[in-house]
Image (cartoon, rainbow, N blue to C red; front, side, top):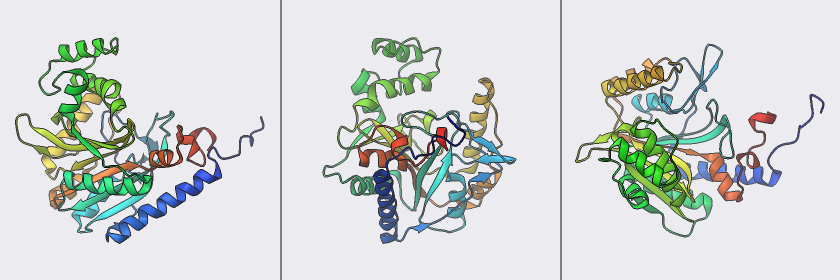
Length: 314
């Protein structure tokens, strides 16, 4: 094949038209609710420290994996309710449901908590996907107990490994506690959730809080949710953490974990922490994968069928 071969788009033009319609619907949804559309830089000097994500370095900085840090700086500056539709970049994410470059919808509601935001996520996705049934909600604890008969908050690492063995997921070790929980969730829980309806799984272990607020209790839980449809994860949302010292601690813990694994240690976003110190309003936020929404709307199984060009033929 010549250097210019393989020039055609990976997605049918009809799917790209559907994609454009969905983007227009999303913008109309937020315009009706007086939520401000914003734009933030794709390139920044800092990067995400999350142990499960890797940024792409570019021009002395990093392409963002999410607009979260910059959008929260806008929240701290008094922007109010905001949303953004943008390209984000994650190294190594290639597959049927993944592309290193993809489109994310992220929005924040000031004065809301994660439960109120879950209801708005359901409203938007039901409208975009033309769903006529109510969504279902299940706590992380109940979902794990129902699927594998084990309490994720009290079970030992050995018990989690034994549960994975019983489920036919053995041989993956050695893993830490969250590693086994992720394996059980991905192998036994998520595939069974959201059968032809949206499903929200909420109240995650504190160790998986990321940027979410922790609610005290027995056990304490992270006020975090994920939304799925037919087992496919569509989005991840939080009641937002506003404590700058706690957020710095979590970043440093992430970096220590990455160091232990021999992975790179990206610079912490000091400007984001400064915004938290200045005062992030109580708020809830969520990030939703637009490409996956379009996949469901078009009833296709591969992200390349709803994006004009994937990484392989860009």
